[in-house]
Amino acid sequence: MSSLLTNSTAMTALQTLRSVSSQLSSTQTRISTGQRVSTASDNAAYWSIATSMRADNAALSAVSDSLGLSAATVDTEYTALTAVVGDKTGGLTKLQSLLVEAKTAGIDRSKIQADITQIQQQMKSTADAATFNGVNWLSTTASTPATVDLVSSYSRVQSTPTTGAITLTVSSYSLFTASTSGILDTQTTSGVSVANMTITSLTDAASDQTTLDGYIAQVTAAINSAASAAADLGAVKNRISTNTEFVKTLMDSVDRGIGQLVDADMNQESTRLAALQVQQQLGVQALSIANNSSQSILSLFR
Image (cartoon, rainbow, N blue to C red):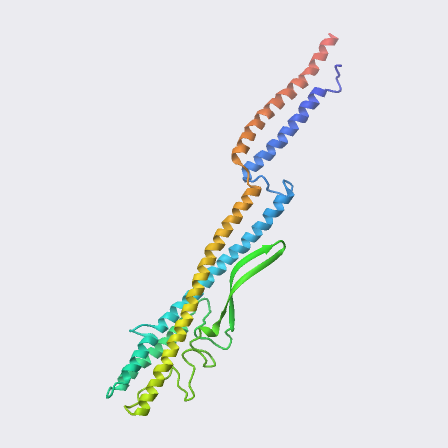
């Protein structure tokens, strides 16, 4: 039946054109954003997972930044500690050799003391200068915390986040402290420390030679403690470096996982776009033909 009021052919063509236009709009959105799931309405489950994973990646990025700061701090303290341990030209190693030299009979110990004083001052200066971002573990004050936590990892199991840290005991690395309990300023019962010992008044007498032996033993113990502290910081440096690489690799892995969930396949989308554009053109043509069919009714009344 030919009807002037109801053009079922045009209605069908219009419905098809609306459907094609809607699909074309979605395809164009995917192409412009590069994502097949860019909003929750596209796929609520995948969008929710991707959003949570992006939040996790932001936390991992913060961990990476924190590890960078921690690495710089540890490296500063490690460099200063190794300088204090020294070698044959300076530091505790040189101080030990000077004390051994001072045991030589008839030697001018006041001249040796001049070198010792310079080494002591240099070690104090090095410890005070071992500061990064206001943090100094070698020359501490009463306000310096007893332990420090270096953020090293982040993970989330379901809705429970967990942050990992490397805990360091500051006293293990302190050379000078406010309570004179550091590696270099801890005093014996006679009030002598590596930082203040003097040999100017010592002679070749047996008692003074015994005193020198005590000083040498004290410096040797300080070398062992400082070397142990430097070795520990070196191990921490390696751990931070390993964690940094792992966190960066993990972030890349999370990015790939998010991409698998929400990224659009551009090859597929380009093919779909071309097909939908053709369908849209055909839909417009079909609608035009359906609308023109009403003109044939006029011929019935001529």
